[in-house]
Image 1 (cartoon, rainbow, N blue to C red):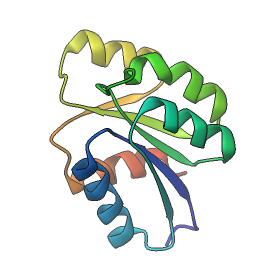
Image 2 (cartoon, helix red, strand yellow; image 1 turned 30 degrees about the vertical axis):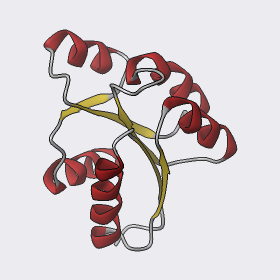
Image 3 (cartoon, rainbow, N blue to C red; image 1 turned 90 degrees about the vertical axis):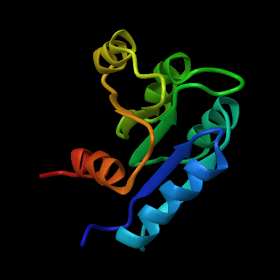
Image 4 (cartoon, one colour; image 1 turned 135 degrees about the vertical axis):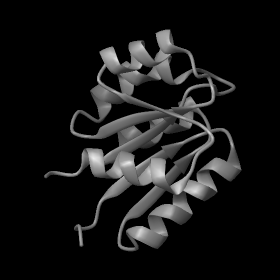
Amino acid sequence: MTSCKKILVVDDSRLTRMIFAKVIATNYPQWQVTQACDGKSALEEAAKQSFDFVSLDHNMPDTTGLEILPEMQSLQPNAHIAVFTANVQQVLTDRFNALGATCYNKPLDEKKIIAFIDEGLPA
């Protein structure tokens, strides 16, 4: 079992945040999940504490995942960051990948969340 980790889940969809939190609680019960509903609160949380994982939504009311990714990376240089989006365009996926973030397509499911976690855990 992996040690206690901290994950920041950023998505304007309450349902998406709940699904993410449930998958983490089920598979990694000792982990701490912090939720943010928009880019502003996400960056505020990232400035306050250190996270091992950050899940970003792309389309949010106040910003996009692409816009806040560089600042999030600056605030969380050791975090494994991925973007979960319904905006499935190859050019967008390529831009996230070029910036060092994995891109997963919505709809969200347990398999994708576990893949994101596995990708960020040391081998």
